[in-house]
Image 1: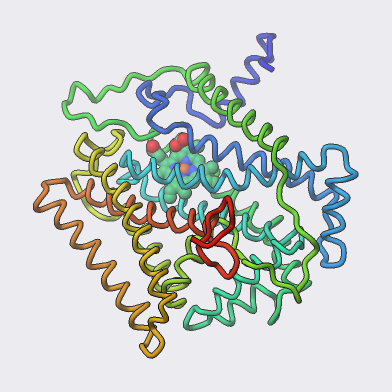
Image 2: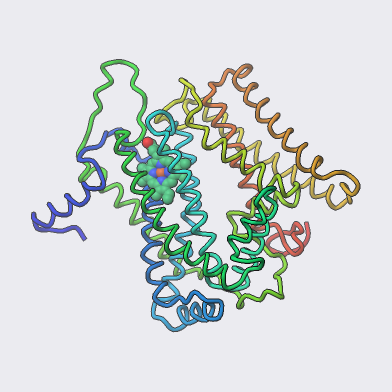
Length: 437
Ligand code: HEM
């Protein structure tokens, strides 16, 4: 509710101005510049903190009582089911919103000089929120949780040096059990939220230091003066509109759909198929086609290194504050996304046929399904880059945007297939009939 008396209003405005500067460049109020995605992520994190604290009032972090405490929460505690649902849907939505936010930062060139450190902090935020999601996944101690965490921690074992050590560290022993639950609980309720909170404050502070959101570069000296408008009400009204709309969506979703809960965890009975949480299913899909060392270690390492390197890659052609940089940039990204999605789908289908035809029995799969695809992928990306820059006369910035979109689209297609089109024994199925394709 908006406070009505002048004293209240001054207090309210003062509080908001702790979070925002007194004035903001009017250009950055354009909704289509950021789609409010960073603000949405911040709101979802706040909802998670709030509902998570409420869940702690009932949840018991031991393998004997965790599942039962969730049943009590959803059956006997007033609004318990709703609070659990809000926590679940906010967490899942946060992954999608944060990835879209990262994409908008790339596509509006908002990661260059002045924003480099914030890009790096953003990457850590992404890592933390994925970790928060993953550690929370185990807490209900049901079949879904137990086997998803079994699969993901088994993947760690493929990391060449120290993989098994890391696996044991997370599990708190050789198998998933009470020590794993204790580890995940502490990470989920203390360490990760604490670090996330501090990094978020730093993230917001750096946006202020950079003078607000990214703006279109000024070319002539007359352009240098930026029109600034008061934050209250101009920015606040827009933020409130986005925040209220998002909150309404989350609350309604949480009334309509319940967070999943299967039977209590049973280490002797694996579900078929046993799947990782949806945001890791792209990697589980890759595991069906490629050597595990490359899926779990080499490819993520290359991807993470590329993301960290991105802001330090010098290019004066980096367009700021303009989506896709230019009109040719927009067309390039659209084409790349469409062709990339189709190509990924075709490769998966062809490889699926090859796998079922008994290929790779006598061959060294470390080479055929590891080294060779990796070299091919790097050659494809480098070739694509030079084709765009030298022959098709795109700027280097546009070529890099297209490369990143290509990788993200390919991972998204793998994730969609993993979520909806993989059935028993991880065979391809139609999701609506669960029959083999
Ligand atoms: C918990 C996750 C995150 C939260 C709460 C968050 C929040 C925000 C907010 C509120 C803004 C300003 C407004 C907006 O863009 O909507 C922003 C800007 C920014 N974010 Fe994030 N962010 C998160 C994750 C990330 C990630 C994953 C990246 C990329 C790796 C990133 C990089 C940036 C950058 C570079 C800016 C400055 C953009 C500009 O100047 O236009 N953030 N963030």
